[in-house]
Image (tube, rainbow, N blue to C red):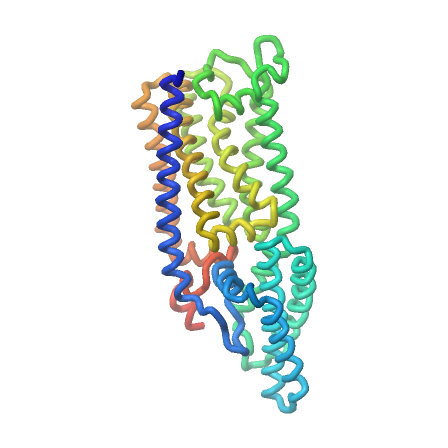
Length: 403
């Protein structure tokens, strides 16, 4: 027999599924509008913008003839080198070499992201070393008439750094996923013996996700403060991993904004006269966030953050499944928060929902103040320069485009 709580959970998951599906359809429409501005190919002297959206589109159009396209570029460089005579031809040859190594690098890199081909992994790493050496030499000797714009050179540097850090991101995301799943497994009821009347803190982690109605301030847990501190560290470090270890602004801003509602829930629990273990309150409020991290880091653990974004940019089915799953988990998290707020603060269901809305509103208010203070263009440009999700023509302000 389905209980009322189970029915509520099923309805919430269905609502999240519908929201995720609608979001995926909207993302597909928005993506189609954006990607129509990205050219399918470039002239022999142009270097494509270093963005995941731009390069993934180019790879998609050339992946069926990948080897032929790479061979054509190398053949063009060899032919030009044999015909090079004057200074102008030397400049053209320098650009062709940079473009050839750049094409070999990103096409093999995206082929590895797409198929996991080991040969492509070796070839993109070799091309990356050649690209760095050739690009640095070209930038040092290009003189007063720049062959490569500094902005484009900076973006290529960021992109290559993101790719170089993929190995670290993969290793650390695997470690974090294993730790979070291990703690969740250790929280299965009666799997770990308690100390007296108290149970292991992982039981609170498990209950907060799957059995929030069983949580009460009359229960006792041990090691909650240490595990709550560990959860905070894992949560913030996950943003560092997701940013490929090349950015500190994204982990700082996104991590702080994400922890703001948790801090408010814990603060209201303390102000309501609850004298229980505040580490247990913080741990229970952090548990749904850790559940959201598991599928995201699970994708990153395969081939890095670039694999996560590539899959969201290209296949519609993959994006629909992922966003639908995340919609279900987010709606489930909101339901858990209402139950936990009611348990810890002894408020009514409506008052708990109002507190949830208040915390989210404060989070949005802080985000809005940051956007108003620094300007939306500056914030988006800064984030895009470090993650390179969108082409410059879609995100940077006009004075950058005219550089």
